[in-house]
Amino acid sequence: MSACKMSRVIVFISFVLAITATTVYDWPNVLLLNLTLNSPTTTPTIFSDLGAWHGFSLPNKDLLGGFPGPWLHADTWLGKCITQLLISGLQPFPDPTEIKSTYYPGILQQKYNLGTTLSVTLELVYLSGRTSFIRARVSNSAKSEEKLSFSWVGDASYYNGVQLLSGKNSVIVALDSNRRFLVQYAPTLNLHTAVIRGTTYSLNLTEPVTLSPGSEFEACYTQTYCFNDVECNAEQKVINSAFQSPDTVFTQNEKRWNDYISRVTSTANQKIQYQFVAVKCLETLITNWRSPGLSLYHDAVFPSYTSYTAWWAWDSWKHAVALAKIDPELAKNQVRAMYDYQSAKHGAGYLGMIPDVLRPNGQLNWDNSKPPLSGWAVWEIYELTQDLSWLKEMFPRVASYHQWWYDNRNHNNNSICQYGSDNGDPVNMRFESGMDNAIRFDDVKVVTNAPQAYSMDRASVDLNSYLYAEKNFLSQIALALGYRNDSDNYLKQAAVLKSYVQNHMYDQTTGYFYDLKFDGTFENIQGCEGWLPLWAGVATPSQASTVRNVIMDKNKFNLFVPFSTVGGDQPKFDPNGYWRGPVWLDQAYFGIRGLQKYGFNVEADALIEKIFANTEGLQLNSTCLLYTSP
Image (cartoon, rainbow, N blue to C red; front, top):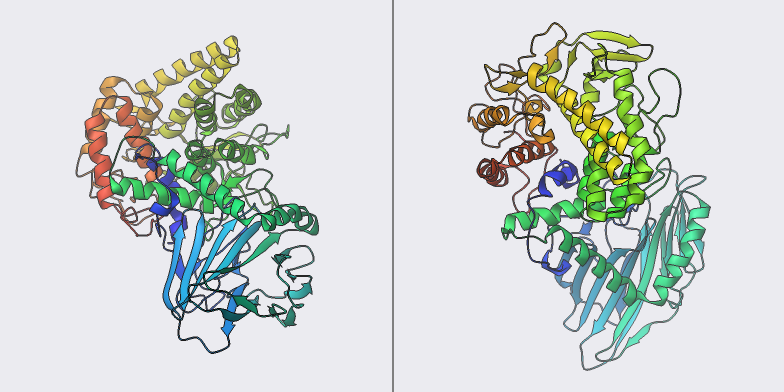
């Protein structure tokens, strides 16, 4: 899987990152984006920024004067290169030398030499959630002048049904009746009208450029991907401003990215591996950011720009926690993006619900939700911002979603909830847990709570730990807002739930927490759900101690890569079985945080070291996977 699958790593990494602040130029090619783009099916490795819905790769030596792409949100390439610079002189140049392509955080760069005296540098950054910006510079270090001709060519042949139109210093690629990809060249460039040939174009400067000794030629151009003409027109102000002051564009971009890097590398740990993964995670989050468009009303990050181009609820809450440390406003919008679709229906099964997933085309899955972690995200953002207006905005919405669980997933009316669905399908019930094919759900049965409200025949310990934690977060939020009665009420509910989990979901014999079936027996599978009571703070100290022992057992969870989703000694353990054995680092995060909460810091540190040493994808220059074999 590509490096874009790293989003689930982010929360895990966010608490071990730590170095002295550095700059973007200290981190070249942390993610390897080079590719040869020769087919519309070429697997993308891209950079994008500021929520743009298009991205570019780094070229190999087969492409000079441009960046492969763009890759469009619709999961396809537009063409091999939409803006390629071509340079010719009075005499043919020898083969280019010193060709170097680099991805620094926030900027793509290509450099090469033509002959011994001409150097070419192209740099690509983003201006907004719709527009990228390229600056091309050609320098003459010779003692004599050079007379050069400049032209650009572009290819949009990988996208079916496009139409190219030429304009003043521009080319418009009409993707359909609404969407446009617009290439604009700075008005200071005196260009002929573009020549269109099917799905390609070319355009030239009207006159050659005489480059005197020690001088430099500069050309700037933009690429805008928008969903309608209104968006394209609105971008014009941003584009015009950039053309007027390119230096300001690059200065501000570097400042923003230096600030990002400072935020993720600002504490005490000096290990280069931690530093490297911190920047890798940062780059992944920002590339997976999308600005409002289509069915997305607020900025949000999705898990992947290839396989997972949608927003799942519990991924969104975890992304928000990580983003709070990098860009608090983006973190807030990540939460808002899902709550924009909170159900206001007063029909059975829906009031207060957050759908499982939001897709860019507006498709929503109302068959199930996802684990309740939004209160955690809201509080984490507040802790870093101290923004009471944020709490006031979100409190009633989180409270409504929290209550939805008790109205629709509380079969026995005893304040103990189960995963379920709105259609009675056991598959959707498993999906609601986020652990889609977990062994503990192999034999679930369906029980009816109410119309459009069904549950599994068991209470899951992770769900009730999440709900316990959320009651405490809601209590803290209410107290910060001065709602003392609400705060006290949530604390009372939390105490009841805590007692139940401690007394009914913990097995004295094995020293571990389990899902509890309706017949009073445990679902006797040791899985990652069993350490969630530690993360939530619901376990007693003695219970936490025995769970610690299970986690540290080298036959169970302390494998080559620790924190497998199922204990290694379980009969159905499958190291490559999705949620039936592999390590998911968000669950490792919960385990480590749980150990730390109960004072087991030595064990937590040892497991962190082991994860970084052995997890595929956390090594330097390797690709991080969605999950990894333990």
